[in-house]
Length: 238
Image (cartoon, rainbow, N blue to C red; front, side, top):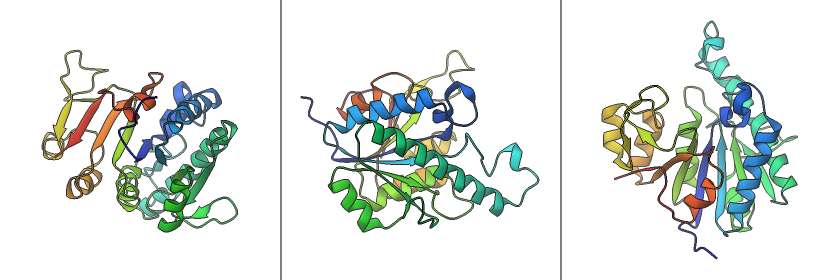
């Protein structure tokens, strides 16, 4: 059996990843594929926490929120992340992986409130913990929530699942000869304005020396490969 490279990680999933090619809502086939990969990776014995976005339903900074008050729009985006978290929890539990959803906004009928010690206890017991509701504050993205939660649970790394195989100096879907960075520093990400995570999230990781591994979620088995220590994707570190 492969020796895992980490004891505890935080996986950042975008809402769009759950929508797959639909572009909106949840693609049930895709969410079950992701859950199956997570269940497989979970067998390595690594403690897994997840922060999920809500862009497949609503994003506070998107065109659909253009004429709305930013605070109201961001709160709607936070609630969208709860929908995704509950869907992912359901898919994981169908894979026989015990899962808990914790939200930054209290809604006791559907999920636990975020309590750091309780989250740590769930992880120690081998449960997957999904953090929803962002940070609970407007003007902060789910990238920042991922960085914050990763610090709070003392994760060894953030795994950022995307639709490309790493960090490039331009969009590789558009620019044919875009240059890929296998390793890059936090400062270079900020200086070059690379769209890895927003600047608040990158600065948080930089200040606490938390590595970020960016990899392609659409390639089957990549979650397990990253957790097993295979060198795929791109790594942001000091």
